[in-house]
Length: 197
Image (cartoon, rainbow, N blue to C red; front, top):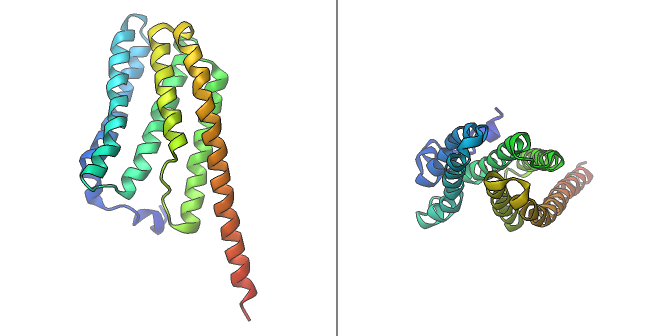
């Protein structure tokens, strides 16, 4: 791991209650996925996933209330969201008729966002905060996946199509932000090189 990334986080950030909630969300995910594979365990899956997703609503406000907004939390929370949504969508595609083309779009978008964020950090040593449209996408997809667990496409399809609206908006915003940062970096490099003797 490059030194820039290695020194971005402090060890004490791992025991902040807000970050422990985010870690707990990831640890609850395997149990939810196992339950989704069993036709008779959908309510157990719904409960496990619902509790896991509830931590997403609590960790941010808790971090702000305790004045513990940290670089680790800024990275860990959106990554946990992406892993949770993508893994759930993949399992639902296998068990509850969740559209596979949506799964492919989700995974491609999230990989692009993560890789883009790494490039931005390498260029500016700055951890970007999730855009509100990204949070809206997570909330909308959460509702859609919960409805798919309950009754498959009959309940979930309409909510899923509605979730594609903030999904598309957030993708466009992230692409624009990434383009601006990279263009600004290139302009700064060109300006610096032109001033060299």
